[in-house]
Image (tube, rainbow, N blue to C red; front, side):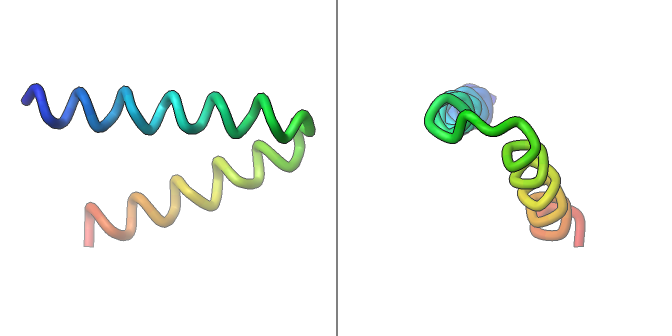
Length: 45
């Protein structure tokens, strides 16, 4: 369980850094949607 929480915390931090660098909210929302679909397909299929 610690490894899962650590992995989640790491990727949340990466996402926050990416949004800080992008600065464009619409592009960020598109990236979030794409990554959520990819993550869902990798974990649930």
